[in-house]
Length: 177
Image (tube, rainbow, N blue to C red; front, side):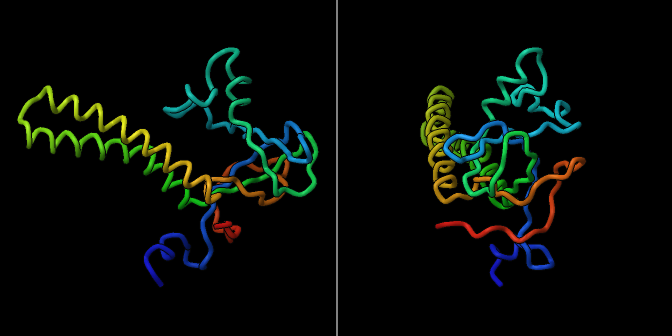
């Protein structure tokens, strides 16, 4: 078994999915639109200011921006709670692209510029330019992951009344290449 498939599977041979609960908030052209549900832990992390967990009057608008379609879901109605899953490996790829890639570009360019020019000014300009290139690379990498359907949530099941988010070993749905 090669290393890539080994990383994506648990000891049982099943891919690990990160699950989340969402509520159907609209149906447009037979496609349900979902909003992720906030759990009791929401609001306690460093990104809570960005996700809408804090701030008076901002939660509804932040949640509306996080809405997503779920085209391959079975017949759902507004108000249904469902469990959706995304491959843990896809999330790790997306995180690496988003956070590491711009830093690699920036520090790599800074090191090369400092070595070649031995000038702090040129090094700083090179680092800023490389950061911009790294951010463009992030956009392209994210579009590639999305185009392959790796970041698209998959319908797993209808959620129970007390069900919350978790990471579980489940067979990942086949991705369309």
